[in-house]
Length: 408
Image 1: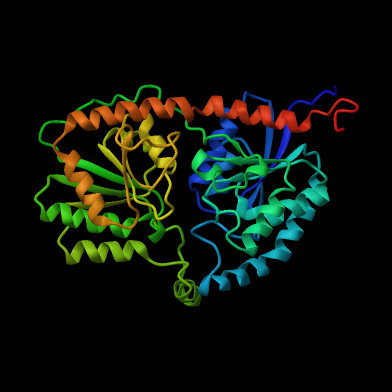
Image 2: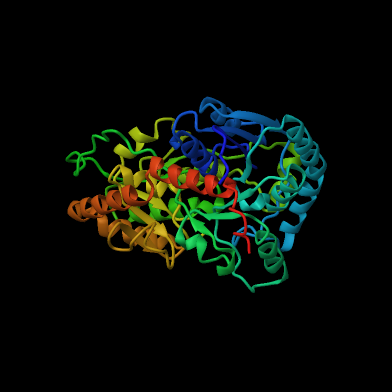
């Protein structure tokens, strides 16, 4: 059996300029690897994500953008969203030029696409670099057999050496024959979160959202639920930590808004707060740098996303003993267990959020029980070092030559 050279040099393809869940998870993965075992080079657009990759010690090759194909359950092309392909077609030539630049760089052992939306680009990179390919699936996909495009995407996925799903809920949207491996996102546990089981006497219950201000994140439902709770006389504060992910202006802002791809959500929320006199109930905090301090100071994490699945903030909060309220109809128990580590509600239903918050507002014992269970589940599935070791084992398996005759 051949030797695998150390350190491994992995080429990561990452599509987003904003520093969000996928980029944060990639940073956590890299930091979880043993020191000097993996050299990482990331191809990505200029922006916050590229800056964070560099701070983590990863080499960055910046580009104008990487062309994508979105067949996720929420983002698949329909109606005006087909116009998004114009942007992806315009990015195709710059993407090819970037990959040629990467080929001249050389010295890589394998390719890891950090989003399945990069599948066509990743397969082309595999073709020109002649390296094993790993593809990360981070969102629920259109179910197998749901249409020609989905079937085509799944056939392309069958050409990939390893497919990684971030949890079992995502994995069940992929064809069984692909053999997706579940490796959860890594999260570095706080050394000592210092959290008390009970909030200080007299302080209102604090319910929070964390992430970019996007319609699909459920921010409008969150704000409406806050109004309902205020009208019920509940002593609850609603905190929104995040900003608009895009700062568009002029014609581009109008075009993206018309296609339903960009909107000034913060301005909408400010207007809603003002019109409903919610200044004492809803707080727009903007970007929060110290998330550990933020989680220590809240009582319930709300994740009312339209994506029908739990996301990274749910697990980050869990490490601090904070339970979550998640819009998910049928999640797998590796992410959230309804009634045990948090509560699950129907998506796009502000009254369901308000009802759940009302149930917990005056039951500190239940909040504490849910939080302790959430912490145990997070420690079991989302430990950064353990999941990085699983990824490293997968890399090594792909790079280990088969003994003579093993292919037959």
